[in-house]
Each structure stands twice: as C-alpha cells, then as structure tokens.
Length: 377
Image (cartoon, rainbow, N blue to C red; front, side, top):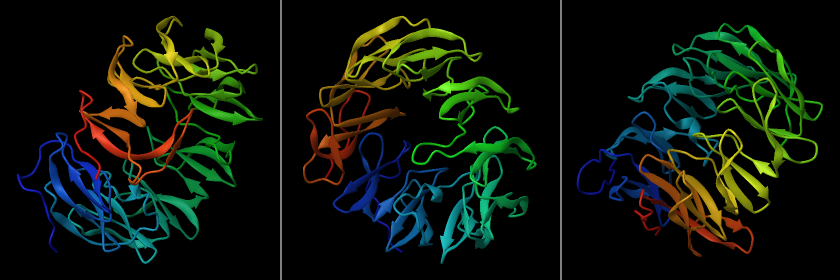
C-alpha cells in the first residue's frame, strides 16, 4: 500500500494531527508537513505509533508516516477511537465484533475472542466474556474472573468495578477493597471518584464526601459539589452556593466566599467572585491575580487559559497576558504547542455559544509565542 509522506525526512519532534479538506495528516511542532493528509481519521501518536483510518479500516503508521500495520481492523466507536491507541505495548482491536490485542508488529498477541475490551494498564486489561467483565494479563490469561457489570482500568493497584449498579474497588488479586455500594449519577459522573492524594469522592444521599483506600469515611458527605484534592486542599460547595477549601481532615482552610472554584495547580487556584470575574488565589486564600477574567482555567506548565470577551488567551503566574485572548477556544500547552480554535465559517467544527458569541471554529496549533504554526485549510 502506498503512503504519501512530505519531503524533508522524519521529524524528531512530536507529530500533531491536522485536517485539510476531508483528509487527515500530521505536522511537527514547527508546522512542517510530515505526513500528507490522506486519511479519513487519525489518532494521536502513542508509544511511537498512531492509528489511522483508510478505506473504512484502521491500521497504524510510525513517526515517518510509513504504514507499519496495514489497515484491516474495524472500530465500532468511530470517531472516538482512543481505545485503538497502544498501551503497554499492546493495542485493542476488533474484527467482526470480536476483540483482541495486537503487538507493535501487527501480530495477534491475544486472539480475537472477547465481546469488548479496554486498554492495558498496570499489566491488566478489562475484557467482556459472557456479558460480564473481568481482567486478563498480557498472556491473555484470565486473572480476575468475569463477574462485573462494568469496570475501569487499574490505577495505583486499584480498579473501579460495578455490581448491580453500584461501584466499588478491587485490588490486583480481585479482592474487594471497597465494597460496591456507591451509585452512578446518570449524566454526571460516577458515585466514586478517582483517588487523589489518598482520598476519593463519594456520593451519598445527594451529598459529596471523601473516603480513603480502606473505605473509611474521612469527610462525611455534606457538600453540594466537590473536587479532588490537590496540594492538600479540595474545593467544595456548601448549601448556600458558596465555595470554600477544606484540608484532608475536612477542616475549612479558606472560608466560603466564591461563586465558583477550581482545584489548586502549581500552587494557585482559579476562583470566581461573580459569574464573570475570575482570579487566582494562593493556598492561604490571598489573591495573587485579582479577579478580572470572564473565565479562568488551572495553571499548567506556568501558563493558564483565560477568557476575556469572546476570546481565549494565556497568562503567566503573575497575571501578565502572554498570548492575547484572540481565539475562540484554547487548551493547555503540551510540549511546545497548544491547540486553539480560530474563526472559520466554512471549516469543520461546531457551534460556540457564549455571551454574544456564536460562530463556527476550526482547530489549529500555536507555538509558545502564540504564533499559528498551521493554517486550517
């Protein structure tokens, strides 16, 4: 099969998906075209390979743009195909509604035999057999018998599992660490949250609280909303609609005074004093960046996305605008690039509806100076 790559040889930087017309390809972080747009859909690179769709089938290319695993696999989740990414050396694939795992040479490492599956994490993958979910190891051997209604990947030695609509945790031996007794909240999130700094959120009687990994209730369910712990503090919403910050014992460290609040990141937390006045506080509750933005995201690698008017841009930790708010959407930097959205009435995208904002957008990338490295076509 012929694959068209751009001239100039492979790139040593991360490759980024781009779309031209109705075809997808890749550029590097300087904006240089590496793989000419020719695919129906593409995924990000993972462990050196990227899943690409051609003639209705999925295969894999390497960082030079060469097809290393011929397109031959189905995917019922198209276009949401992150399940196809390699994880721990194996990728989940499907052919005619049976699921298995391939290695990076394309060999079938674990034969097609499952009704469904998930990616490997910490050496185990969840698979569906006979209508129930269990776990296999990388040899394909069942290590935790199928018995669950639903499952999640292992993380730090624990995995969330569901039985009769209730969620709990098991360990790598399949032993129940936290008995399934927390309900799913339809359309919102699971009754159990991911453990952060040793605690996980729980939902009981319409209130949020926190448990530790022994299932001991550390902070009784009492909050209307709650976020995970970060830097020893968690943002929680109390009955009067105000947000405060508590420590891991439940003691209020920063009193309720905000109409909205986000988790701490890099020592600062975005908080709102009104619906359209966001700023940043430190862990003492002192404003480091005064409320002035219509919206504000958490800091990542020394930058944060802020909203002013209909535009999104970036500030540094002093509050200085380092990339002006001129994009319809903006996301955290990954390496030396960030994804942003530009006005394009004819481009692929979706509606953006905000305060006086209603338009079409097209995704592209900027560098650390805010310069566009690829012009949507």
